[in-house]
Image (cartoon, rainbow, N blue to C red):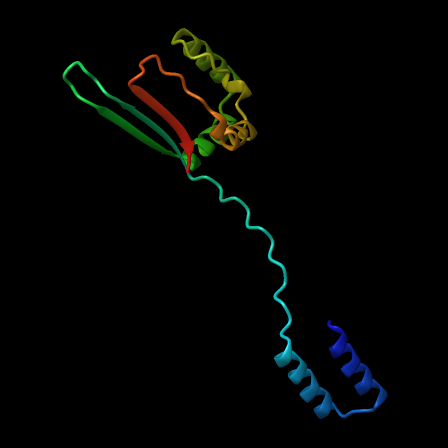
Length: 142
């Protein structure tokens, strides 16, 4: 409450002015100097909705340039991580063995929702090296 309004209410409490006079004074003070709006808090960064992988290349072999654009809903990834927690440990162990045979060294028993959120949060720091100087790979969240 500003100082002028407090003084008007004090005069009203002391009986120096009537309620109608106090109301007119308060309205006049508000018109003369409107109160600033309350400070707004900074809006949080919107939660990313998609994981996008872009691959582009130029091919001098006659096929010409190419482009791959994959957009995966992050909600699908989040749901998959949550579902992995429901899989029995024996099944996860067998899946880990098969993944390892295929050259994918991922331990599904260690996959937690927090790990996915940490990955998403730090995805802007991801660098992908490509052996071909004419190819470009981008991984980003949007």
